[in-house]
Amino acid sequence: MKKFQTLLATIALALPIAVTPLAPTATLVANAATTTKAKTATYTLVKAPTLKKVCYHVTRTGLTLEKASFTADRAAVTLAPTTTKLATKTTYTATKAIKVTAGKKDAKTTTYLLLKTTKGKTLGWIKATSLTAGAYKVPKAKTIKKVTKRAPKKTTANRDTTNPTTLMVTRKVATLKQTYRTKAATPYYQAAFAADRPVVTLTKAGTIKSGKTYRATKTLYAKTGTKAATHEYVFLTKAGWAATTNLKPIK
Image 1 (spheres, rainbow, N blue to C red):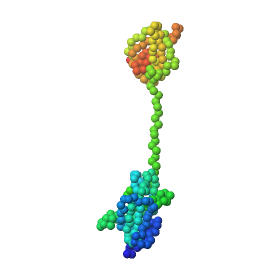
Image 2: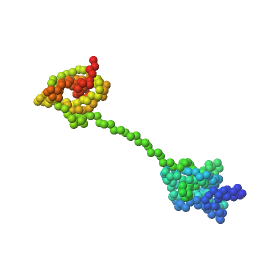
Image 3: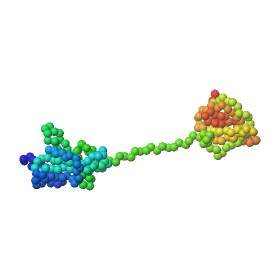
């Protein structure tokens, strides 16, 4: 009997509302949530330790709290489900705990915690194993790597056609088998030959970097006017027509 009275005194200190043994049916409700029609369960109260303020959060939805009713004439507690549900992404605190068993021989001890909001509002009891220790932390935003868009490769459809050059062809196009390497950055062109006169219009299609090697398959000679100097142009595979001024033949 003395041991039982000591346990009741411990509970009275640990819980927010004191237990007063008014009658055998007197109970203590840990929160004001409305219970559901689910069956309640009565356990043997083993211990009611006081905890330091600890933060918890939950990682899954649908967890409901329970209310606790403590009998005044024996070390027992009845736990009943409530309609109060815990929210994820929320921090809760606990300073009260109870340890209970089913009362059978060799029954395991289960710990329940009394949860409150961070502002101190009492919510209800829940198994400690349903909680995750620590305050909820907002996940760090993922760093999105900035992708630099590359300029589209110039083709016949998107080449620069703002400054076409018309040349007089002085020698017909001939077949050529020669490899060249660029000595400096060299522009290359798309060629449009006139059908009724020896004229070719060159339109810049891109630039070849220095040190690149290309195979030439055709050659032509042309000049900008009657008194202008004649220049040789060769057709480079996978590129276009280019003046041989910046090209070095490779044997």
